[in-house]
Every structure is written in C-alpha cells, then in structure tokens.
Length: 65
Image (tube, rainbow, N blue to C red):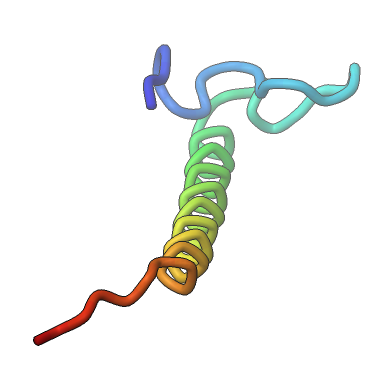
C-alpha cells in the first residue's frame, strides 16, 4: 500500500461536492485519515480471518500414519 504525501494533507477520495475535514488538512485531517486507515486495516484483517477459516474447512485432511 502506497500513499502520496502525508496522511490528512489532502482531499479524500470520492464523496460528494461538499467540503470535508480531510480537505481542510491540519490535525483534524490527520486524525480522520488515521481513523480511516485503522477502520480499513481492521476490515481487511477480519476478511482474511474469514477467508482462512473458509479455506481450512475445504482443505482435505491428510492421513497421518
């Protein structure tokens, strides 16, 4: 994952035409960017956990002799 610039220093991706905290930058923008990063990190971690349990359930058991 690569980022250009500093967290919270620019406008967010997507959204409507209104202004946002991230567009303003400063400490609130950095804090909001950090919260977004944390949210998506947790979401990705949960998805990987579900995928792992799903694939382990499908894996055939090997004979241990």
